[in-house]
Picture (cartoon, rainbow, N blue to C red):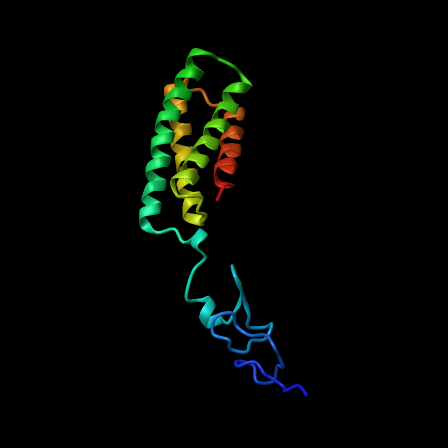
Amino acid sequence: MSSTSYCARHSDTETNLRCGRCEALICPQCLVHGPVGVRCPECAGKTRVPTFDVTWPFLLRAVAASLGLSVAGGIIAGLLRQSFPLGLIESLLIVGLAYVIGEGVSLAVNRKRGRSLKYVAAGGVLVSFFIVMIAGSGDLDLFDILALAAGLYVATSRF
């Protein structure tokens, strides 16, 4: 003999599903998928997924890594660009530098993810791009703009 159970928030919805934390009855309309199972809205709202919880110390580490890599890499890439005119490879140098910036920021914050980290990585790519343009020959062509767009994508796709 089975007893009929109803959702705690929707009294007309029959369910046998329970919250993984507080054991409250929940229906498919109000369940929230978490990293360790389904939760009721109250229990799901109590904690954030640790991967996406970017606190101020992590954000400061990300900014420091982004600025350090973008300034150092931008100067080196700009000098290489000025010394060795390589054509299309010059633009690929910008994309490679963007990858290094994205990977460096990701390592600095223990592989966390989040929108704020995308902005930090994109800012680093923009800073390095302007340094490359200033330290390099200074001429801007279509390949450089395409390389900047590709670099922004490469750096931000890590987050």
